[in-house]
Length: 261
Ligand code: SAH
Image (cartoon, rainbow, N blue to C red):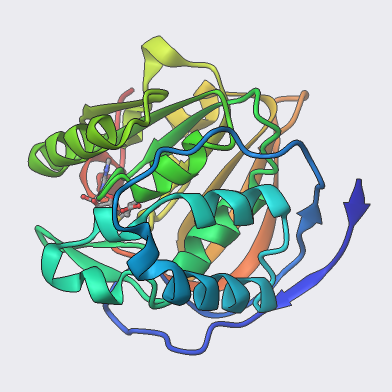
């Protein structure tokens, strides 16, 4: 195991355009680990190879250095998760619209959030905010099972069908409010929230294992900060901050002051 501090900064923030990094300093634990699992293939990968290689080099220079994470980002065909008219922009390092006012996250953000989970291959991971299913596909190559919740039923159905078609058999998608987590599938080793919330949803803290982490963007005043919250054995939590980000808002129960769960 090698521990290192990596500085990363994004260059093209897209205000109001979800899921991009604004400027960020990332302390990452770099873990050289077993190679990735067998990846699903698609027919026209060759067409995108050059753009993908350029993107991967950019991500590495921005601090995505965990070889397993890089392997997964290389393996998942992002062009399959964007609208047909955006396919040629699939390997630009930016968020893209996926319909219903939502976005597929910027690749740098996907890489950073995934890297912060330090997955070894054995974990059960919950994602809140399936969107296109891209982040779930990346996770699926790095852990045992992915459970992903999407509040928009149409997006959930599209992502489920896309992931099935591409062969990501260890991803389970359900439509619902991710604030409440996925009780029947809990506990989770790690939880990733890909929409910005005013606080850590209490049910998610209950459903993560002791020692496990929740990575999410949090609203802090006017800013949004990427944080990693670890659940401690004494019932408390420890929070680390990783800089400013811009995400689409988490909707539903998290916006209500008191939510029974
Ligand atoms: N991870 C996605 C991008 C996420 S965009 C990808 O890889 O494509 C954020 C998503 O979170 C949107 O699709 C939005 O509909 C969803 N979302 C917002 N609030 C939610 C909630 N309470 N529960 C589940 N999903 C939510």
